[in-house]
Length: 330
Picture 1 (tube, rainbow, N blue to C red):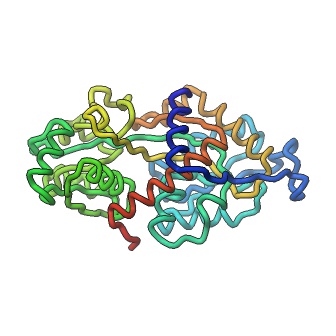
Picture 2: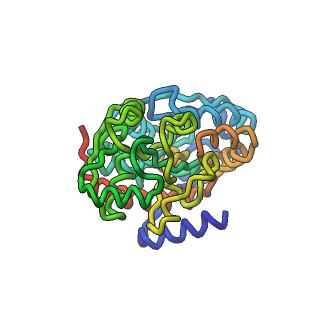
Picture 3: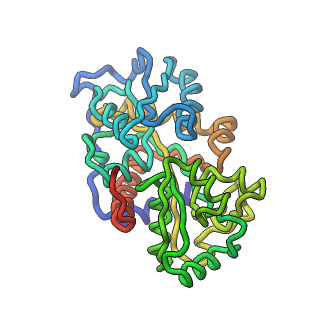
């Protein structure tokens, strides 16, 4: 936790003084007392289609929460508009703790900076905890003559605009992560957006593009079809400890895709704290840690206040990333 506290202090300093969400008492709003909460099933909205890695995070935790809360937690997928539809649904729900959101870097940081949304990512939610975060691996086609991030930067400088990288779409975390890297490294790169990471990885393997920042390519690295040359984390990934971070090359850069739990703004603080305590207990379970860390994810588990500050800092950071990338909604 000392590591996260240092990280949080740095983010807060960069973001400046900001007002955190305020939660009022149950008595003041006429809500159910926290002592009797929950008295009925809880709905957990995932703003993505079922079956993906993000959906899995909610399902892993939701299956254990009834052990503590005493009520079912039902995962409900509401994809659309780049995750904005599900987030809007939660923002407009009753502030009673019975509708939760799997908040992500997209819902609360990228999408509101990329397109008009009908919710305020900083005011319309009550953050509960950051659940996990995961770095990307920098993967290249094995035929590309680079083995380190320094090699990649040197080649990009030698061929301005000549190296093509793929992403899961314009404005996706993969796209923005490379745009931020290019700005930090002072190189020009050619972005090729795809409809999802799968087609991009297929073209990377075939040599149609030269590299990607991605968190789903480890199986292809292990099979020798791609080469991992760096990680975007602050520390090396546990699933690829032999792969250095970009920071180790001397470039002050890191990027994480992250997920957390939030509920509707205005939910009583006592209910937020009850949900927080339950999720923190779940995150400590060895089987939960193992499942969330399967693809290199790092279990976090922060306070509501720390998560609120993190969201605000990431929102500001992604605003800059969208500007740098030139991404627009489609």
